[in-house]
Length: 94
Image (cartoon, rainbow, N blue to C red; front, side, top):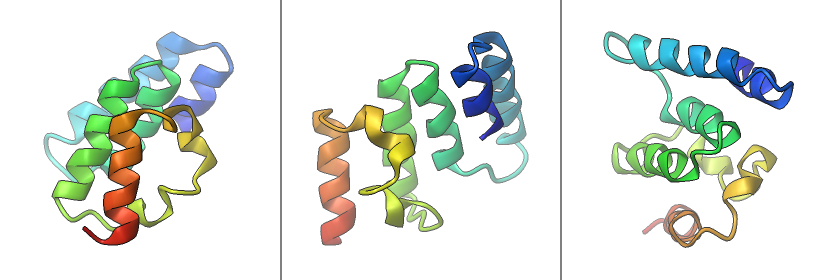
């Protein structure tokens, strides 16, 4: 959320630093792919955000994916074919 706040406040470099810290932390402990995706979205990397969400789904991540269909923080991904397909898989259980 901090990365999102920085980016939405025009502080893109600070948001990138948050993302870098999360990626570094993920090397030694669990970091939710959903959190990484949220920062990727506000930094404009929609493809990478979708990759993170797809990875979460493939790994059986259940902490946040259950809200993927309605989470307004993901609105910028709606209409992207890969994202819409992922939402369908998750909400239909396939």
